[in-house]
Image (cartoon, rainbow, N blue to C red; front, side, top):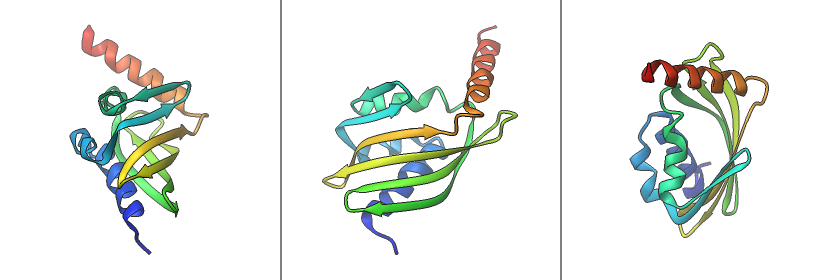
Amino acid sequence: MSSPIHDLTSAYIQAVGEHRLDDLRPILDPEAEFTLGDATFRGVDAFVGAFVRLMPILERNAIRKIFVDGDEACVIYDFVTSTPVGPVLSVEYLKFGNGLIKSSLLVFERQHWPEVLAALVELEAQKKG
């Protein structure tokens, strides 16, 4: 059964996976926080900016399951990369308020994520050289 939180979660994950980062701005709280590893990005520009570096290797996001409980959602999806690693299992925990995303905690499957980052660094070096 769909709900506004479910639909917003799906729209968010799909927008990132389709490289439509400008579509994130209207669904983010002005003070939204995005946490990835040890880093937390605060505010809409920083939240959206955290994804910019990943766009060259992201082919799409493939949602497996969305769980909703009140004003919180958890989405399990494959972060499908163009690297030799391919899809990386990801879990994102989102909190909402006033129909907007207030915070996100993103956790990647740790075994392959370092390989993905190494491929990204190599791609960036090729573009500079």
